[in-house]
Length: 307
Image (spheres, rainbow, N blue to C red):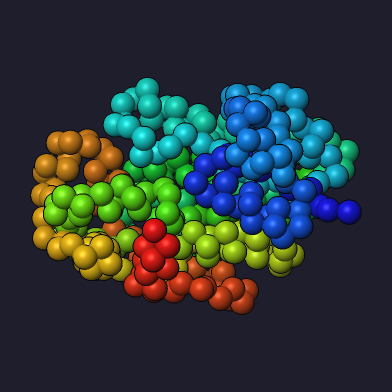
């Protein structure tokens, strides 16, 4: 009998790849989304679907009863628009309400899931410069750090029910979707270059390693608490963009000034583009996880070679 896994946010960039991977690995996957019909169509009927508006408790808790795991990836796109006060509140609420709903559902069912995996991000640490940062680092300053703290806390109550809980603090996830095509687009017009001079460190992970790490943690009963899902070798932004340009056969020469970025993006510039983080996956590697793509050149080669 196939063990059941419930995923919220299962139609997003990471969520859809994870759903396909889990199904291929032999799990019975239930995707909780706003549009159940879209789920059935996206995954060709290979997974079950449940409708949820993302804002509160609905009718899908029965799927959790007796399930192996709940993976909570739900949350509004952080980079989807300028951070107005209204949008910032939506970003925060979408994550906190999703985590609270998962925790409430787990509390209601008779047969608790064995594990809850709670999404988060390296934004938890704030701007930490070039020094290596592992999971022992306290939370930093800024809007994203605040969001991540509350996001992580939102499902914490499942631990009091005896459920193993894992927090995944993901870096910049690289694949054929997500943020990478947006980063590559200026190169098509010979306008590629690192933002703000490019001295800031960027912590990244290949999509394949992101998915493999989630499954590794799910299946490893020793895994508990927060884990950084980042490749072991962060790079400076200028190195990243130089490699990206080289792969695309285009120069990386146009460095957008910090002031222009701040004028265009506001608060997002400092927290998403100019922030410097050298986040290392200490706990993940200590458990024995091996990265298929530990360096950015290999990662970009694998992704862009598939175009």
